[in-house]
Length: 132
Ligand code: BTN
Image (tube, rainbow, N blue to C red):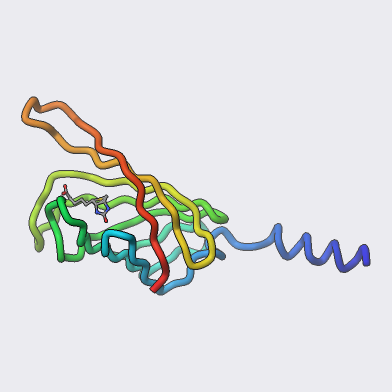
């Protein structure tokens, strides 16, 4: 029994940083936006992919933008710079932080933009991603 417990503990502790994030995988949030995970560095948990924004009330919709982030255990962070040579440019950046919970990734986000006053401003919100 003790050996079994030790084995179980070892297997949990030795789970790699990225164990919770399948690659490739596709995630859709409640706004219809699509996060695609395409690469993952097994040694660091750093991943890359694309993000297609389909959210009503925002710009830069319907086109893939590069995304990058990191997953460590169940903690996940990723960002999109909404500036691209091949798609409309919004000159904004969004950063999501959340956790991978099975087929779901609940997140909070911050979107930074430069206002008419040339100062940085911030919008905040939540996105709930589900694996497609
Ligand atoms: C912009 O309008 O400046 C760029 C697009 C921002 C889209 C935001 S990011 C947070 C929220 N979640 C989405 O899927 N889309 C919006």
